Length: 465
Image 1 (cartoon, helix red, strand yellow):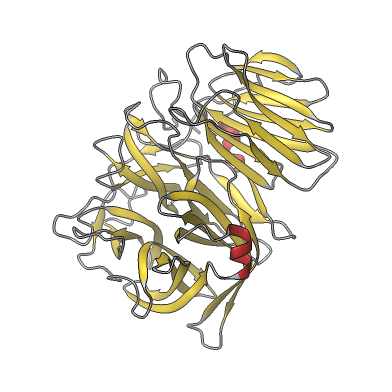
Image 2: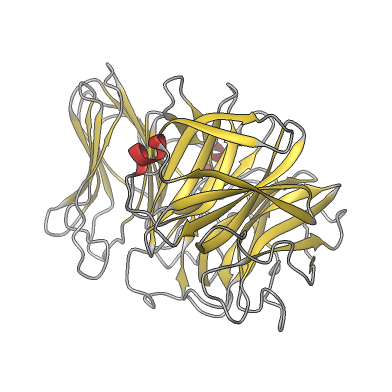
């Protein structure tokens, strides 16, 4: 069955990957092995706070049914990861699944090391046991760069050669992604700065607020373009962005260059960060971390991963994004809504609405009469998520989230709701992730005006087979 918290907690997503209790943050190393999808994630197994960082682990045969596995990586006393096994990826190294991650030592000062851990039994489809290597393959940032943030390795292939990215921030406030040649995964060579915040396309897409780029990810699209994804750090996690462009080999095979042409906000919500990408032969999948928009300690769990999203690029360079088709395996046998009107909404559902004129769909109603709404304006290509009187934290007001896409005759929005997690997809061009915590006297009611096409499915545990 799907992962999730006990059903008595109405805030807890039941159909998204997260541990039964305690803290989770960044997804790490999505990996397909021997017929199963594996997801690792930052995890404190002892408390719902960001500390004591391990790698949690779950796997699925179909992206709908997930099961827990034992902790994959734990800090090694006296080792390079003594103060935490931080973010990274998993790569197939000659038939051996290998975790490539940020090790943080006892004297951590913002600069991590790049560590490896290998699957103890590559023939185990559950990849239960992992053996860390005692020595980092990269002990710190390269000489000649005044780097003050260095973490989150990501390994990828291009033209038959293996490369890696590392997120970085320089002392002068320039965010950057560093490039390494790691064709031999135990022997890394610094190959230069792949891209930094002074690049014109990056500056236009992100501005100059970020002082570091975390969790860099790179994937190839079906049309041959590449997409660089970064999480924007300004002293704290801020938001996420993407850049599309070309990835070309230079005069020597050990030279690689990324030429950005367009970019923008990856997720327009306020509760999404540190996405991780799995490159498959015919598509790329992405998961993100949705943090809690409430005070710590309000529950014995914190953090959840989003639904898997298929990501690509439109011809104009804009992001193409949609929930993965496998999520239909979570649908009930029949939809709970197929026509405009009012109907009780379940705790978890998959809703699609399409409008040819201005329309407002209500997802939730408070005792004061305020509503959580999605407003569609096809003629301007505008979708607005208005949280009404639901704050994002103890007292923080939440301004409406406005997303703009090219105007069209019909505008479609898909809403994945699961407990406190709301994921909106505007056409196939934009996504919004927000957390909304229901109150005991709230009315979970869907209200759809006439003239709007609607289909909604309750999410239920998938059957096996």
